[in-house]
Image (cartoon, rainbow, N blue to C red; front, side):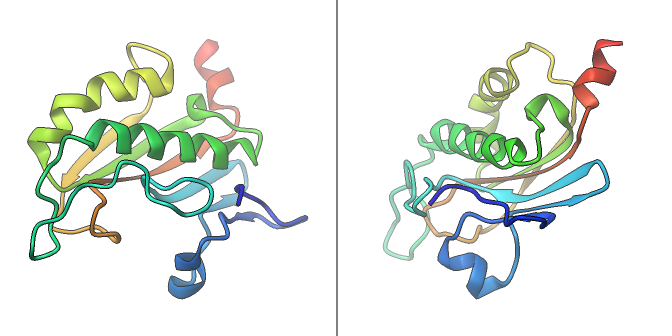
Length: 156
């Protein structure tokens, strides 16, 4: 399932089961702002990409997939933003929720720079350590706010 925005709607969806179960859109436009719900390591069919192996208690036991999970989350954000005519260059603020701060810091710089296509991404960024995320094999979730046309403002 590709990300979609029903005609005339300000909201976007992946069509994955947790949208219906939890009751939320993946993104919502208000004026020229786009609010993107937390994105994580799933493909367009809702299958997890690079899931972390779990221990006997259902907790991740290996954090080496952090970078791949981040790349997938940023790719999902880019696909959602494209539905509104926006790109990652329009992101003005992001928040990363991570299970392991050390694993995140080991890869976040290079992953962010690659995702944004610049050595100095022009968005405010927060990183917060949490004890659990929605899917047990999930190591990171990224939420953001974009302002359509922000990249044009940066060029001035």
